[in-house]
Length: 327
Image 1 (tube, helix red, strand yellow):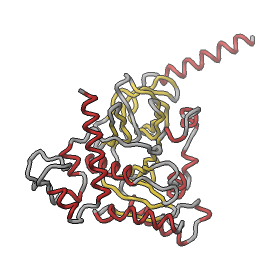
Image 2: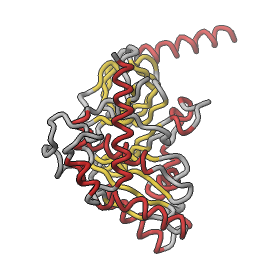
Image 3: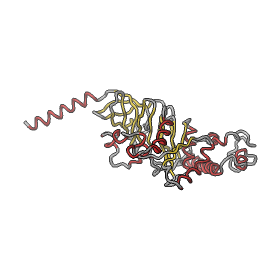
Image 4: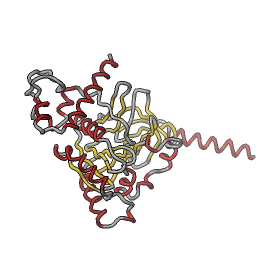
């Protein structure tokens, strides 16, 4: 009799799975763990999914269609056309970071020090992809380190990039001064799907918890199962704040290649270059060492910050090397 009960249980389970299998779904990718993702389907249910074929890569923010293969599990068959896509590419590989975001918020802090070169690269990638940008200066109560960070950010503020200062603290520990910074950032996020990005150690996780008080509760059983054994910085997650507002929390950055951005588009992605573009002696000027370069003239005149020019030069050199590797 005991064996009969076991067989009956397996049969019942098989029937339930068969009932689910083959059902079509539409949804949004709300978490990504390598090639495994979590999809919130229409109706609010969340399922674990893989993509059909190795060439298909679904990322946070993707709108997808697919079919159920078992209870709580599905296969993604197609991605909707992406409104925007942010990715990085170097001589070795290409990596899609996020899809369908309308804004990038780059998080920096005075301690540990941040790389203004890496910041420049992310802003260039966003500009090339048609995505708005802002900078969140976190831990702005640190005194000396924050003053140093403000100095490094001056060239970015000068080209019109909004800088929001904030002290991200847990909701229960926040006072009025801290609240002002978080509220100012929250207002900047309203109506946008914002990619939150930056180097590790900048307090991005604490900032998420300040902006999304129930962030930990959102991480459900499916995400915990998919992320088991993975380092937390290798996963990304989408937090829906309002119907038209969401935060896409991405892994910490260490490098950002821009080999996919052609030289003419690269120069345009530096806003302070634009008044000089089209005025160089040579039409194919790369703004490196060519005589009669209008961009280099702007640097000499103090209208382009030398560190920004250095960042541009490094990217051009890297892209030239990457192009040789791709031949």
